[in-house]
Amino acid sequence: MSDPISPARATRAKFTTGSTMGHVTVMTLTSTIGLMALFFVDLADMYFLGLLGEDEVAGAIGYAGAILYFNLSVCIGLSITASALVSRALGARRPQRARRQATNSCLLALATTAPLAVAIWVYAPQLMGLLGARGAAFDHAVVYLRIVCVTFPVLALGVTLNGVLRGAGDARRAMYCTLAGGITNAVLDPILIFGLGLGVPGAAIASAIARIAVFAVAIYSVVVHHDLLGPTQWRRIRSDLRPILSIAVPAVLTNVATPAAQAYVTAAIAVYGSPAVAGFAIIGRIVPVSFGVVFALSGAVGPIIGQNFGARLYDRVVRTYVDALKFNAVYVIAVSVLLIFLSDQIALVFNAGAQASELIAVFCVVISFTFMFNGAQYVANAAFNNLGRAHYSTLFNWAKSTLGTVPFVIAGSALYGAPGILLGQAAGSVLFGLAAAGFGYWFITRLPGAKIGATPRPAADLPIER
Image (cartoon, rainbow, N blue to C red; front, side):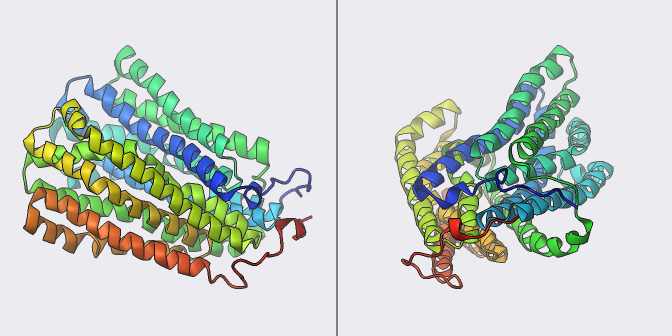
């Protein structure tokens, strides 16, 4: 049985007061830094191993990265679950419930990822073979994957605890967690790869230790600063499991839809040869840097919506949703205009050929603006996940990744060749982004008991859990 939490120690639902646009801005920017740190861990391995000058080594990280990206998608789904449940409980002034659900979310993360880690370790050779790894690249990929996958449960716990911090509104410490991982990896990579001469195993060990660093900072922050973990209430696990799984399962399925669509687009681009694939790969490196803020929106906006929903401040839920859409639109337009002027320079920096440069130009001049609709869908997903309708996120994401991708890519390829593939994918994202955002707005303005424009019962009037 968990220890009682005194009202004085209870974490305050900070998003139920103050400017919703201010909360959206701060949460999104800090979440972006944290998300970029996660991307940086993989990029650091790729960069330092690339200095070895062996194509097989770089290829090995690419093959192993496909499995690790799936792992990260599972972890992010579990993080969304913890963030949604904790934010709603804190908004409703139920700190004991928040503590219990944070604890049980961590148990679910451990129970889910530990068997997966074992399966990946055992079947690593078969997985790498299915992905097409051969020769030295195959051997390196298996070694790298087996070392890193041992810490899969540690990463899951770290990312889930990060979600607890975001649910509590602690954007700063949530950012510290992922920064700790990125910095640890950057420091250890050259030491282990070159200093100790470990090569690929050294990079894997650095990544594994970086994951432990994320977990250590996260659990310290959650326990010491928020007191949101405690002994397990075994009698309550069954009742808690249903709301946890109702978010976790669709959230994980939602996250794996995007890599599935990207795999299809990559295969379609490959028909046009290596220059087209090179251009597509360069775009893949531009996107996280240019639109990391957009990718961070869902995880950033979710806790704000969750706390206000838990506090029954429905007008603030709507305001948060609209402010997030405005923030997304302004950011994407500003970055897209900048990309227009940088298009030629980007092609020069990456030493792109004629066909690759053409794809880069199409992305910078046209497609970049359509990320506004990707961002709108991420905002809608945040609303669905935190308002008890996570399956809507799954529905819209998979619809975009199938109906919004395959026919549009086929048509674009037939009309305009390789650039048409990118234009077709972008057209599908516009259509389904508008559909998701529009349905999301319709949904939140019809919340049970909500009277938009009226003054609902303020959070301060809700009795705090004793």
